[in-house]
Length: 239
Image (cartoon, rainbow, N blue to C red):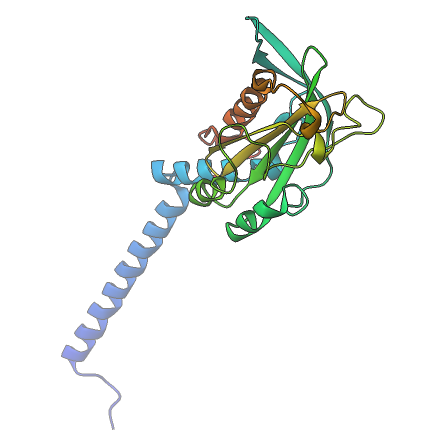
């Protein structure tokens, strides 16, 4: 029995072989183009968004909480608040009052970073807290757990540093608070007086002396939430 194939069968086999080779070549070319092309605008925007959401973890503590922060003085001009210390604790539960813990957990709180500052006149201490959440939507929803209008409770718990002017800054001393949100972050503040007077023992309320705290939080929030387009040649980016 002959093993020779009829001519039409050989033609078909040859054509199929050619088609497969062309298809493989096109696929290889497409794969090569995909691997060698630069990132699209959408991919760059997505990378920038991811970078913002990780700043709470990738930035150094001193970059998130600068040693000094400028604010507008009551009498005009600018003054600077000085950082007293940065808390090593980052847990969500111990950083806020119990009434706010559930809201942060339900919206996926990743961490709460806190630092304490003192104003230029050395009379008011402020703890600033950065709450990191998974995305902007959940940060916006978590914001509703905190009161508007300057109330301190339920809110951020202060951080006292022994042996400093902030060593008496306990939860009972809190007199004012604020909450701001941008991107996947909330920035909270809680303020009180250096002398350690409990809020309930204060006679005349003077909300203006604590107003600068919100300005501090806005400066920190602006740095944390402002997108930066990827620099593909830089070490910290992978394009």
